[in-house]
Image 1 (cartoon, each protein chain N blue to C red):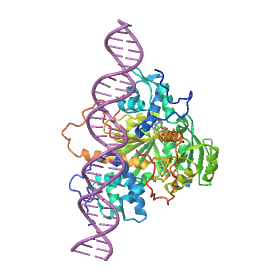
Image 2: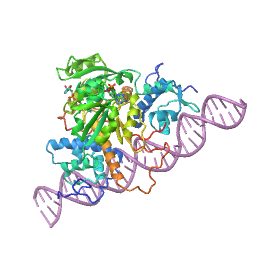
Image 3: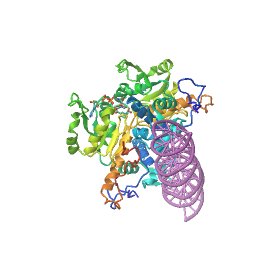
Image 4: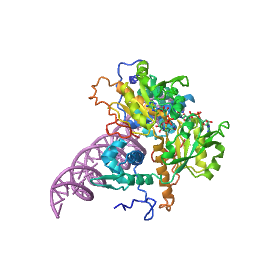
Length: 256
Length: 256
DNA sequence: CGCGATTTGTGCACGTCTTCACAAGCGCCT
DNA sequence: AGGCGCTTGTGAAGACGTGCACAAATCGCG
Ligand SMILES: NC(=O)c1ccc[n+]([C@@H]2O[C@H](COP(=O)([O-])OP(=O)(O)OC[C@H]3O[C@@H](n4cnc5c(N)ncnc54)[C@H](O)[C@@H]3O)[C@@H](O)[C@H]2O)c1
Ligand SMILES: NC(=O)c1ccc[n+]([C@@H]2O[C@H](COP(=O)([O-])OP(=O)(O)OC[C@H]3O[C@@H](n4cnc5c(N)ncnc54)[C@H](O)[C@@H]3O)[C@@H](O)[C@H]2O)c1
């Protein structure tokens, strides 16, 4: 019964965990499901239906079921999904069973905020190093970590096994930093600098650009403003649910 | 021929220039083109080919041309696009001809970084207010702006015309803040708190979740690692695709 | 004035993602 | 045991996004 052998969780595995080749869109949503599941677990839910979880994660329930079926997951018809098991499954697929080491390069305005952020630790990551080019910042201690000079990157990479590099330097320096990260073997980069990075094949880059998000919102504002002649749909009022559970799935959140 | 009236550039506008109904994917890329165009303009380029701009923005040139054609934009065959004109066009479509006012709620760790960020001002936005619930933070001056209590939101909204609300509070408070923003008429929200927001129809929400980005990267690390263990498959593998496309989801190798 | 070089704009085919709708499976109750 | 209500997993259809390949348009030059 509880002996559902899940595809490759640490305990047992046929041979190769055989990571299914998940669609990118699914991969991007798994972390959201995971967050929702942790919230549910905290409130004591042992199982959850696709409808319930979809609501908590802000997606369509059919999409959620398809996503979960993709990773060979196990729900029970008529009952739903086992929350704990599903957490374990998703964490395994996302590679969160090992706590990955993150190197943060650029400890300025934004870097400070990131360094002090506890969301890293609580979601499967560990800041292994803070690096900056400014010698006057080197030595500063943030959250128990000392800022080291970026030239020490090779040494740091040798000491710790850096899985992910985070770039929070000005755009002008970002490409150089990316090159350095790649040189020391980093194959995943999260870039906060507003610029395009060029990296060799096999290296993944994701970017976060605040201004782009705002500009997308601006576009929709503009569009909405130009439609003011249209009748408003019956305002249903806001649903204020206790933080954590959002039941209505009617939201305009724009994906990707 | 020049009869092409471009939608409504500053010069004058008939009335409402009927914003074309752009695909979301296109909207999401326009800001990237805009950034690249500004860079090009700074270096003195007066025109740019789709190939050139696509390179600078990190996308496929056919996609770029299709995007630009969507917004009825004008290139000149055999020449390319006029950089200044294109900037004007895109800024118009994105609604950046008016500098939009942003209210930032939650001036903590992250909020401080955002408040001190000059990327707002330089990309078409103006921080109109800093708000926090913690009375001990009220009165603090950041970057020339004073932190006000969140209860003053209605007054602030009346004074300034807030177009966009940015939420940088803990997740537990985010829904309540969103409700407050909606109440005072804000219809676009950028949410940094790791939670799903429930908002009435007509309100747009975009979210930025650092942990999700990291977890997506983690998945690809995991997948890459599980492939390294395997023998080279057939050997077709990675034979230096010249500038070809190896892009999986975000971006990978980009030639210039 | 016409020609060739260049580059845009787009028709088309293909792949990915979303959503609906429903059969199959499960547990509970009688 | 059997039936009933609930929920999953998935086939199929359609919407959406992508990239190729090429005709149409424009410029510069002889
Ligand atoms: N502050 C924000 O809220 C915010 C928001 C979105 C994006 N960003 C982007 O994030 C980046 C950082 O922003 P910021 O406000 O923290 O800037 P900042 O100037 O405060 O900090 C940049 C830091 O990077 C360091 N640095 C510069 N070159 C370096 C190099 N080659 N190697 C290592 N470190 C180097 C600097 O010494 C400095 O400490 C910028 O690209 C900015 O556009 C910032
Ligand atoms: N720090 C980061 O780098 C980072 C990165 C990604 C996401 N986040 C998220 O951003 C949010 C803020 O993070 P932080 O590190 O700045 O936290 P923080 O605790 O430092 O700051 C939160 C601020 O919000 C204020 N606040 C609380 N309730 C409020 C309310 N109802 N109305 C107005 N203000 C209120 C608090 O007084 C505090 O000043 C969190 O949800 C966090 O998960 C932070």
